[in-house]
Image (tube, rainbow, N blue to C red):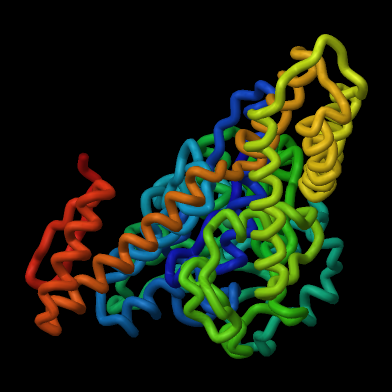
Length: 464
Ligand code: ZN
C-alpha cells in the first residue's frame, strides 16, 4: 500500500489528520484480517511547487526563504511536527517513509526509461511528459474522468508563454538556475524532480508494479494521481495496469460548511485542536476527540468540522469508552438470552462495506443499552458469548479503529494538570511567594512528580 504523505512546509492540519487516520484504519484492518502489509507513505521535501503545477516557487524553498533557514531544516522541522501530531492521534507509522530527496537516482532512472520509450521530451534542461503522445497509446484522465478540453481549461498558462509543447504536459524534471538551493546532477543538466515523479518512482521501487493499493486525498486525483498513472504506463508499458490495482481516496474536511483555507481564516492545525488556541475553538480537545470525529464519517464523504461536532464526538467517545469499562464488570450466566454473534457479524460487514467506520460505530452505540441491561441482570450472556462481546469491543475499537482506552485520556488530562501546577509554581517563585511555591512542590512530590529546575524552565518527571 502506498499513500501520498505530506509536503513538509507547514503545520499539520485537519486535512492531514483525516488522510492519516483513514489510511491508518485501512492498514490496521488489513493487518487484523491477516494480510502482511508493506505500508509506504512518502515525505515530499522537494519539487512540490505552489499551485501544484509546473510554475511557481518550491513550497519548501519558499518557507526556507521566509524563515531564513536551510530547506532541509524546514523539511525536518515539519516532518517532526507531522510525526508528533499523528502519534498523538494514535496513527501507526508506515513500514517505510521515503523522502523525495532521498530517491533522486530512482526518479532519474524512471525519467530516462520514459524518454527512451518516447513519451517525454527535453527542452532547455527540463523534461516533460508528452501527454498527446501518451494518449495515442493509453487513456489519460481515467481516475478523474476529465477529458482533454477540461484539462486545457484547467491550466493557467497562456499559449506561447511556456516551453512545453502543450499546456497539459507536465514536468518530470526541471532545470535549476545556478542560485536555486536544491538541485542535483542529471543527464539533462542540473535540476530537480517534478512533484509527480517522486511518487511513481518510490511506490514502484518499494512495491513493484502494479502494486495493490494507492491512497491519498481526493484533491490529489488531478493532477497528481493522473500524472502518476501516466508515468507508470509510460515507463512500464501496459503491464503497469494503472500503477495500482485499487485507488482509494479520502474526502476533504470542510470548516462549518466552507472549504478550509488560510485566506478564509478557517485553517485549523491539529495542534490548535489540542490546545484550543484558535478563534473557532473555546477550549482544547484531546486527540481522541478528533480521531473519533474523523471515524464518525465515512471516508468518502466530506467531513464538516465545527467545535459543536468535535465536542459531540468527544462526548460520544467517552460514552463508548465508559461502556467498555462496564463490560469488564459483567458476570456470565449459564446461558445467553440474546445473540452476540449476529451483532458481531453486522459490525464486520460494516467494515467490509468499503470500510464504513461510521456504520460500525453506530452498532456499538446500539450495544450500550444492552450492556447496561446486562449489568442490571435484565438480560444474560454465557461465558463464551461474553468473551466474544468483550473481544469484539477491544478488537474493533482499539486494534482496528485505533481509539485509545480511557487510561490514555486520563493521562493526557493528568499531564495537562501537572504542567499547569508546574507553571503556577514558577509564577509563584518569580513573585517571591515561596510559601505557595513550596506547597506546590511538596504536593507534586506527594503524588509522584519530581521537579527539575533550570534557569529558564522547569521540567518534571515521574518518580516514587
Ligand atoms: Zn503522491
